[in-house]
Length: 292
Image 1 (cartoon, rainbow, N blue to C red):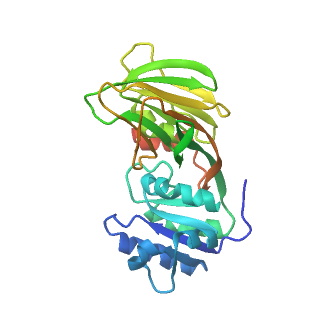
Image 2: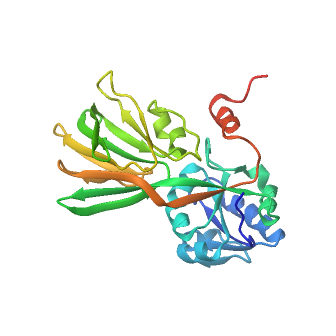
């Protein structure tokens, strides 16, 4: 069980586009201050800041805070995970989104934030991916992902030819809409919808899932954490391919580019205050609960 010595400073990181987010921020800040936590908020949410909150840059907030309270859903966590990983700031999510696999609490469970101050928590370390595009020997794109890297066509009417290589060993050639390279955390997201396996989130594997592959032999692959996966576009059939990390804005690929995906040195730290197993949460989110 991993703990930090002092958990009396928190940054409240809201999804400003959510309905009723102002009242949600107010409730959260009020409770954190009630239990003796100093609260920071990033400048992009300055209009939502309550009395007693210290507003500062994203970098300063994450550096000064002992933990981050993310108000939103998994998408909000994904959007700030790179920054939190860089600052080594652990995250607890308050789900006001949809499924919320990474979010630990619902809004009705705000009182459980006191467990963090009392040291009654644990931290899950989640692996991340480094994504790099090499063109003519130079790195022209780099990003870090918590869920997945996606290489796909820019048109639903086009398919691409893609070679998949693990280290220096050819794995397969795909004729598909694209391919997903996922972390275990990401296997309950887009990779799951594409027919990939569900992998325990604290495992450390790289999972390759073809997107709408035109071939009966094309199946998902699960690789060891130390593999370096290379994706090479070999044909785009008059369309274009893009690479995107965690759904962010894509980067357009050329024939001859190499997309290299490897385990990152950065990790996302998720705070857990409940004793529920991953399988219990999975069942609750995807099938509505265990049958008795």
